[in-house]
Image 1 (spheres, rainbow, N blue to C red):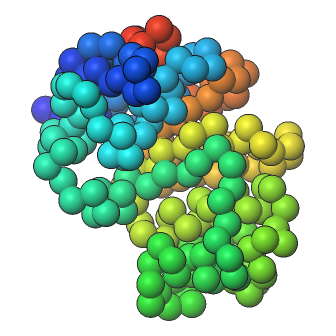
Image 2 (image 1 turned 90 degrees about the vertical axis):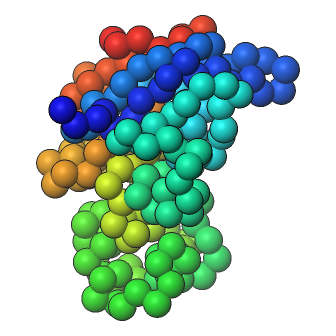
Image 3 (image 1 turned 180 degrees about the vertical axis):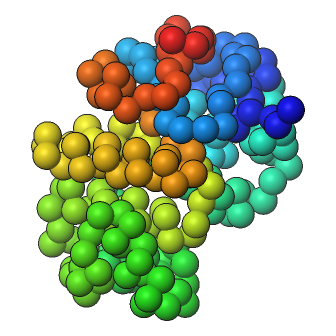
Length: 212
C-alpha cells in the first residue's frame, strides 16, 4: 500500500509560548483537494507551513509520502510541495521576472504555458506585476508555484482577499489542477467554499486535527 501524501506522527508545535498543535496524528490522502478547516487562530495555516517545512515541529514527525520532512533538502522539498499564500505577493518587475525567480533560466515557451495553466493569457508575461488586479496577481502567484512543476500545492486561504468572480476562477483552477494529478491542500474558513471544492475535509481546532 502506498504511503499517504502527508502523515503527522504525534506532532506538537509551540510558538511564542503558546501550544499551536498538541500531539497531532493524522494522514492526508494522496489524491484530489484536501481542505483544512477550523476557526481563526486554530492552527490551520501553521499546520500547512509544517508540511512545507516553513515551520519545524517541537516534537513528533511530519512525513511526505513516507519520508521524514526533516531529512529532505528544504529547497528541493518546496519545489515539489509549492505554496500559495493568503495574499498575493508579487516581486518587483514583470510577470516574467516573477516566474524566473522560481525557475531561473526557464524559456519563454514554458513560462507562457505555465501562465495559461494558471488561467492567465500568455501576453501577461510582459505586464508589470504590481499593476495586476488582486485576482490576476494571485493567479500569477499560482503560476510562480507551478513553474517548478510541483506534485503538491498548498493554498493558505488564497481567496480571502479576492472578489467572488476571482474566487470562482481560483477554485476552478484548483479543481483543474487536481484533475490533472496535482494534489491540493487548501486552508479555508468558509464552509460554503469547502462544500464546493473539497474531496477530503479535516477540522483543526484547539490544537487537534480530526477528519471532518
